[in-house]
Amino acid sequence: MKTLKLVLVALVFSFTTHINAQTADEIINTYFENIGGLENLKKIEGMKMTAKVNNGGMEIPLEIYQFKDGKQLTIINFQGKELKQGVFDGETLWGHNFMTMKAEKNDAETTANMKLNSNDFPDPFIDYKEKGYNVELLGNETIDGTETFKIKLTKEPITVDGVEEADVSFYFFDVDNFVPIAVQTEIKSGQGKGMTLEITFSDYQEVEGLYFPFSMTRGVKGQPRSPITMTSIELNPVVDDAEFEFPEETETVPTDDNKN
Figure (cartoon, rainbow, N blue to C red):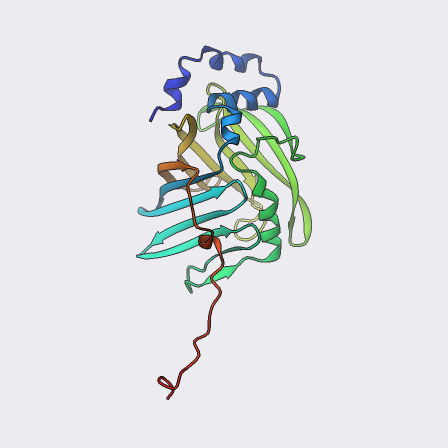
């Protein structure tokens, strides 16, 4: 695989455009061009990311599936058991409870918010105007020693505890390579409510002519975060629809042979 940095050395304009970039659209357009082209991104129907997350020194294997039709699924292999999290078939959102190991559906509000974001694959900036989103360049900011363009992305409002709230994220684009190296969002509910969730991206590598980050971290800003390392990314994988279906519990009816 080629790394993004090596390829962009030959693209001189990528190192000079940021001097004249005055709008969020110019930055986003350059970003799409640098990672392989907007039209090529639009051709992707799905992705499979095989990864490992480091949690307290323990490496946990992951398989992450995302599709253009909104379906998504994360498979976690933990202590010999296969658990599913964030499973969405387009209508139902569910995952395994880590304590009981049983499948549980998410509440209606969380599921409705998931549906709103189901058209963001593979990148929320694709056709953002047509989706009713808004972007705003807020200037420059340094993230982990790297100078970046800070872009505010406002999407459709979500509902939190019955109240409609703005869905806002802040993306930080490296001023040299024009790729996101971090995204920050406010945690709206649950543990950490009101804090800032930060996801970082690095080690962009080529997959079938497109570039994706192979290294990520995720966690509350200012606190220790769990590193996620991609071992492979596969485009347009084939997955049985049954993998996304909620496993309805069936009650065992005693027979004459096993009655007491």
